[in-house]
Image 1 (cartoon, helix red, strand yellow):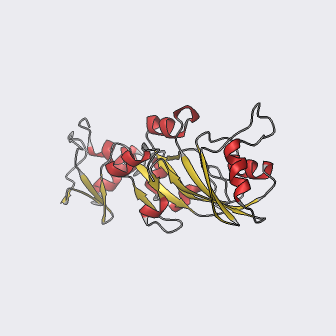
Image 2 (cartoon, rainbow, N blue to C red):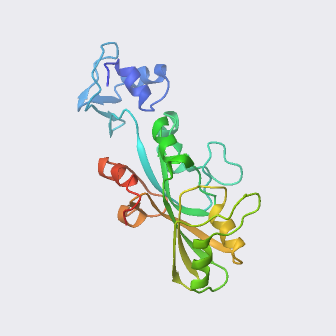
Length: 241
C-alpha cells in the first residue's frame, strides 16, 4: 500500500468524507497504532496500521472480504424495496467503502453470502463462467424419495432454457430435505428446478461456497466475519467437503 495522508487513509476505510475525516482527527477521536494522531498532512505508510476510532480498533485493509450468515427477510440490495437491506447488518463503514454482495440471495433465502469492495474478487466469485460451486439445502413441501435425486442429476427442463438443467451433485437428507450443488447461478435456479421436478421449495439455505462451509464458520444468523487467507483459499477448492 502506498503512503497516504491520514485523512485519506480514514476515508479509504469508510469513515466518511475527507473533510469529515479531518474533523475526526482534529477532535482527537483517532489513534494511530495506539498513539494520538498529531495531524493529517504528513504522508504515512498504511501497511499494518491499526486505527482506533471512537475507542474501536480497525486494522487498515486495502480491501475487505466478508462472509455473512444471511437471515430471512433481508434484501441483497443497496436500495431495498420491501425488507431491510443487507447493509443494515454491517458496520456503517462498509457502506461508505462500497462493500457489495457477491451475487444475490432471495430475501427469503438464508445462509452464506460473500461481500467485498474488491471488484476483481466480486467478478471472479460471482460470474457464471468461473463455475464456482455452491451448495444449497432445500426444505420441500412434499415428501420425496431417491427418484427426486435421480431427476435433479439427469436434468430438468426449465421455462426459457434451451436444454435441461442438471445439478452437479444431489443427495436426499430426509424425505423433506434435499441438498443440491450448482455452479450456474441462474435466476431462482434451485426453486425452479424443484418446481420442474414436481415439488415446491418451502425454505432454502446456502450452506457452502467452493470448499468453505457455513458449519465451519460458527456464525449465527445475522453474524459476519472477515475472510482470512485460509478461508479465501477454501473458496477456490470446489472439490472440498
